[in-house]
Image (cartoon, rainbow, N blue to C red; front, side, top):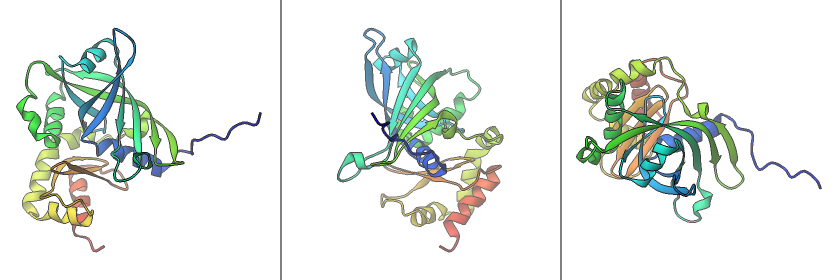
Length: 249
């Protein structure tokens, strides 16, 4: 028998960028874990945010079935990517295989994760500090990208992570930097929404920055923009954002 051609394409920078956007622009995801009693896959839905290095973060109740499963086996998969009109299989989606890392309240970066999560999910403030809720960072190990019919790629976990020495410094100054940017340019978020052709959904706001780009949110919509090159500090990020908002098309 002749060898069948591989359905996989060679992974290039465009595929990596699409995968990162699919992961970082998700407000929620399907999560698959292993049922500790039966060993069967168990799927559920979780809210999702990202840490400063792009690692996906979930907030879960210890009473939920998927949390109990993660307590026994830290392996999990996330499915991100929203379908639109027509055939749902024609739209890009990303399956990311992860190893879950619980984030204890005393952890050095717990507050950072809490702040970034609430910036996306403001209603989570109602329960985020309940004692039975906890965060997991889901460290990507590898990923499968389907960019639409005939566009399949395999990625390494590092393709999804922001490899920057500036991560911690940017995380420390992110909230203040965005606040100062908006104070200096009150129309910057509206201008960004127009320039990026964001869906019409009321007011948009910047809900997260990192060396690789920024996130904007409005109601149920989340928009991710990736820079061409990594930013070296918060001033660099704010400069990039201003150029995008106000430069001539």
